[in-house]
Image (tube, rainbow, N blue to C red; front, top):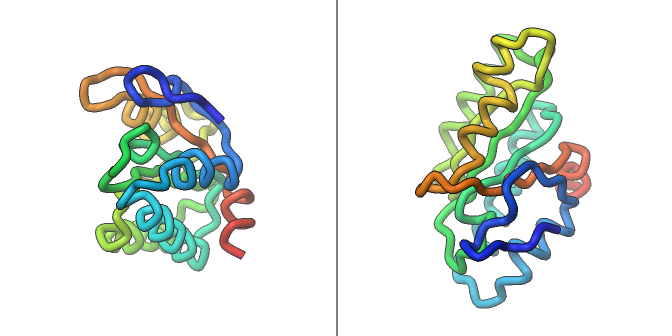
Length: 157
C-alpha cells in the first residue's frame, strides 16, 4: 500500500493493489468517514453489473476517494477492456453502464488496453488515462490504484 503524502494523495504513478489492501487503506482506515463505506459498497455493486455484461482486464481508481479526504463524494474509475472485446454490443453495454453511475456515487470511464497502434493508445488507451487521472484539481501529480479484474472478481463472488 502506498502512503499518503503531505497533500493527502498517494505517491504519483500506477500502484497495483489487492482487494484487501484497497479496503484497508481507503475504507477501514477511515472509521469516522460518513461517505467512504457507502461509496465503496456502491462502487462494487456497479462492478458486479459490469461483470454481468463485460470481461474487463483491470480497473484504475482515482479521485478524492484515493486520498486522505475523510468524506469524499465519489470514486472515479476507468474500466479497461481488451481491444478484442470492442464490438458494437460491448460499446452499447459500456454506454448503458455509464448512464447508471450517478446512483452508485461513482464517475466511470472505459478504456482499451494497449496494442500495437501507438495512435490508438494515445486516444483511448492507458497512456491517455494516465494524463486524465494522474493529477488533482490543482494539477499536482497523484497516484492511481490499479486492480486486476481477477482480483475484483474474487471480491464479487
